[in-house]
Figure 1: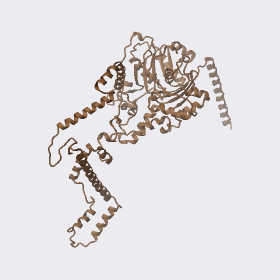
Figure 2: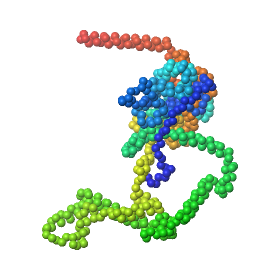
Figure 3: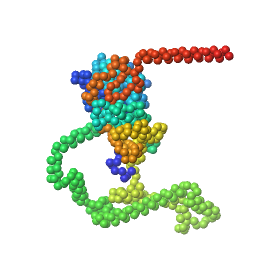
Figure 4: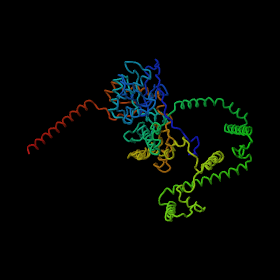
Length: 614
């Protein structure tokens, strides 16, 4: 642990949430669609004309814990998203509207929508007079979509609503060749919070019938890492929490980085002045300037040390010179003194280790040292009790030391003090020697370190081997190979020519390279393919393209829902899980089911009568 540099040691970063402000509502926002990225991990809400979402919060809420000694008010205060300062304190009270990636708790969804609309500054009591664009999972069940539409139309009185899959929308904005007819041919790998989807896209649309879903996502990786570290470091189990296993974003750090990017863009304007300043300093690059400054600082420190030198000898010890405390000024003599100190330190350390080992051997039964001690004691006990003058000879003291449990020696205070002095001097001038000996005491910070070695690779491997978390499913590479096997060789080449990895985990280091490596093993020898990560995530782009104004006019409205069954016309929208059925056909099916039920009941009654008659 001592070999780790300070750049390789990180502290646990606790996510610091800042309560969301209430944005002002202006007249120029009238009729602007509201985009809601309703993810199972985070919810992002903003206006369609903005590049960044106004609200970005954890998609959950919690209630205050009830105090039995106090009377609760009539209305219990709810904490939503960023209003929860410490998630771990209310971990078991958190509630969400999602069951994995599907919305199933619509009472919770209503609370989250109330929070979103109120912080956007909408205070109209008649409803939300804005179109709604909301994301949903791939192949969202028709029942869940109908309940969400009922919530939007009946509770909020929205004029129209549209649904889209966030992965497909991200794929559309990242496709290389913009096409108004639909999506570019390719393969979409969307890694979400709970699930991962592999979606083939051909002829301008997603082939959902041949898409596949894996029950592994970012939550699986964070939970696996948390539990693994808790088992490895049980004394630190309370400090290793699920929130710390997740990525903690520091809003101040993100703001500082954005300001740094803008400053770097402005700095390019003053590049000639920058080069002129380097030439005046006599260096070519900024690295040479740093080296020159460091050399000057070392020279200043040496000069100050010479000025502060005190050439006095105290109790026969050498005065502190430039080499350090207790060392002569000459470099060769200082090296000889350090070698002598090193040999003395080794000798003291070996003697102490030998005495410690002998004491341990004496304490154990059936060891050679313990048996020799018992033999000498038994021989002394067999002798007659007359005066044999034991102790007058020097050899008798060796027998006493042999039968003593302390092993015939103890650590003196002078020896311990000398060893501490040598350790302090060698730690300053020969730190590598003490590191090899391994005798440096651990500090409080070192005792509380958690080493990440294979965990950095093992955690990401869960995506490719779900068996690590107990799931009997194929990994990401196996799923991609299976999906490609459903198409002809020509279509397979069209798919692998444009493979895009989207989702929150798309930025994980090494993920795209691993997908590229697995795809190279799947494809024929020397075949061409392309794998890349999405450059701009949907949560960072809320603007609705002007190309879809005609499609947006065909959004689902209350009348459209009752007639066509929620058909969404956006090119990156998901098709309904079940197609709309004509009302006459539905009535005929109900009558047929009723006739079958009557026949089944009549047959059961006949069988019952036959049994009773027998």
